[in-house]
Length: 303
Image 1 (cartoon, rainbow, N blue to C red):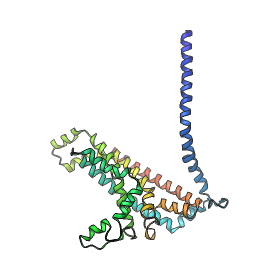
Image 2: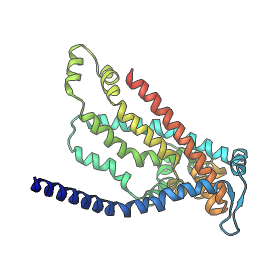
Image 3: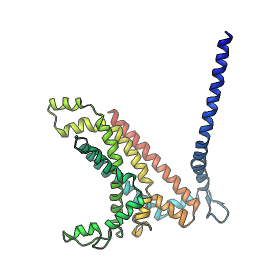
Image 4: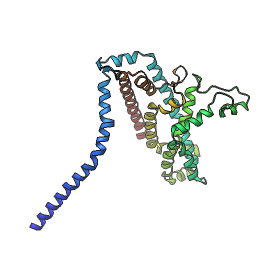
């Protein structure tokens, strides 16, 4: 009996020791998360109720930053540009990704090479990519895209300098960059679909198009929901590509998205309280859209 009690005490002591060790390992990570994520998040919420230029003392203004925000024409323009980017880039991006994923799933040769080729732009620095695309979009006839159009006797276009063409040009770059990630996710799910579903469908006389809509697409719903949600969140946070390709936010603010508008107010005009209000409005917009997407996709999946 004493031996059993000693064993229990030793186990209890070792457990406390392991728990303390685990706690010590977690403390540095928790401190980093708290200092660089949690604290700034709540501090920004507090700051959104103040007027502060980082030089003079803070001045409490209540909800004035939010009221001014919704009365600013540039805010609504940036929000419209953001929705334009989201509505155009996500359907085209996911559609192309699924198309290429299905092609790659057909058992073609050198599959690993194609996977790497598609994924390489995703892990490449945005600055390096921007340099290449700035050359492609060069407005004179020596830019690669205009050089190609010259063969069809089409006049050179000012892609990034045009209020109409600037945002589509940025969208093309970002779709190309993120294509590989979406393809890999889709391809992983496609390879896990049981082939017996397709064999049964062929016996019943279903063609390839019917197999896609009745088997492939429904089974991809969870994957599509994940990519749609993540793509929406990332789309609302797009900044680096716009900053590099169109540093001023595009001609007539054509590429000024909500995060770029936040950057201009925070780090060019030093309106930190106003910028914090923009950040929280953006947060709630993303939250609402994500919840709507989750509800709609969950309903479709259950049906």
